Image (cartoon, rainbow, N blue to C red; front, side):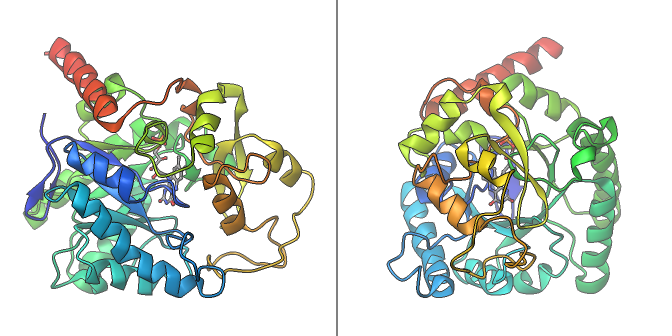
Length: 358
Ligand SMILES: Cc1cc2nc3c(=O)[nH]c(=O)nc-3n(C[C@H](O)[C@H](O)[C@H](O)COP(=O)(O)O)c2cc1C
């Protein structure tokens, strides 16, 4: 099985660990995944939440934490591929991108909005960029724009389907529609990307994400033409994951019926584990006592709750006040394992399935 080529590095395995904010994928998880031959992604959403000045100067704390987290991850995986996930909806998006490039990240994966001007920050640097798209339409729009305005062909494409965790690039009513399924969109985008590769003579790995649970699923998406997969929820239940033990236990204790679709102040639906917080939010608004200016699209006056507070409460393990994002298959996770064990089992299942198909 081939790895994923990012600039002049190639991962040993076709697995990316998706960025998980706030604080769920930081240096420990990303470093462990990169060390095992996958691609490790650190989330930049409120990345500085543990800094002592985060409450008074969140922007400064976040920018400082970028270099710290990357260098800690590089210590774990000196030769691995390490990057950042940056949500377009972040208020300080441009500054965060610039800092990730300045710190020499191998890769930036950017979604929760279309990163239409991302190339301007990386042209002439070694940092590679990949948009997250949820439809062939978004892929066409974005690649056209990058090529026309910046003469820049995407270095990789991440397709995030409706079964993913966190914010979802779909309307609620689209989540179960067959045309929006990850399978359907992957096949459509793979066909378009292969044409683009032909005309631009540039190799563009296509990565499928959202609800991919085991090695059989990985083999399935590779068979559909994807070059790799991005998994997030499975990596939460690992010793190396940066979230608190209570966060990990909330995954272990969740069953399929505990997984809910919620409204986020970001303006997109999100998937999370139903708990006391979600039950309260669905009845009434939570007064916002402090604004961190984290999201461009959040209107503090009308927002149902503060997403920064809810996600920080979650990563620290506050089961009553936290928002615990998860993918649609989180209810199938029953034990905490380690990154090397998880990746070895995913790969052996995938290889098994692929070899049977030959
Ligand atoms: C706890 C959690 C937090 C997430 N946070 C982000 C984020 O900050 N930015 C982002 O683009 N995607 C985020 N995601 C989406 C993942 O990166 C990933 O693409 C998706 O969850 C893959 O589906 P899976 O969890 O079923 O494997 C998050 C997912 C989870 C489970």
